[in-house]
Amino acid sequence: MKNQIFGRVALICRRFLQHIYRSGSKNSGSSYQFIKKTLFFQNTSSFIRIKPGLAAKNSVNPNGIYIFLAQDLHMSKKSSNFAGGNRYERMRNEEELAGVTLLGNNRTNYPTDYAPEVLETFVNKHPENEYVVTLNCPEFTSLCPKTGQPDFAKIIISYIPRERMVESKSLKLYLFSFRNHGDFHEDCVNIIMKDLVRLMDPKYIEVTGLFTPRGGISIYPFANYADAEHEELRKTRMKEVFSNHLKS
Image (cartoon, rainbow, N blue to C red; front, side, top):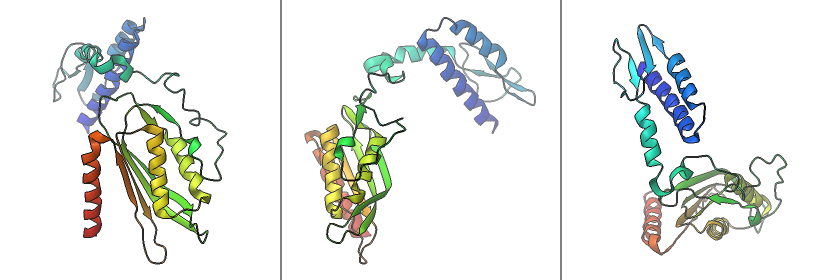
């Protein structure tokens, strides 16, 4: 418990001082001195003391636990030159959020029919990294095109972004727009995947629909897409889906 508290305080101090250092605040020196003098944790006879340039020790001792801060700040400044520098570490600016209009808007209009035009994107700030984004919609609903009866599903979307990423509130409204849309389960999953491919041009994307049983049968459509570089991943994932279904 003690080590957890020490680690948490160290993390808070480090992030605060990194923020001051990067922002170039004129008050950074006085702010640092304020923290250095006032922030400590007392547990029995032990203290956390902040001292620049001293590495953290792993155990409590009569001299206290020293949090490594000064070198962290220096390394942070050096590492900011990696692949674009500070643009990865700072908050997003208005220009980067220019295409995001629905998030934070209290006057949300919920579409009453299929509406791919509500989808919005934002810039991927880490295009040099390949990473997976998974979006889970456990309350998807649509209509049977023949009977008009409601269908319910859990929709799982996973993709490797390129330059653009889908904004989650717009995705929520887009998926909501299927509520009065009549299509078979397989159609819904393929439409969602194709709309997101057109929207984002991802390196790879897959969409799974876990629909609740109708007439005693569950339908789990799976659709995926990949660019030429990730074609092997697409084939592998398709084989894995077949294999998993055969085992279940």
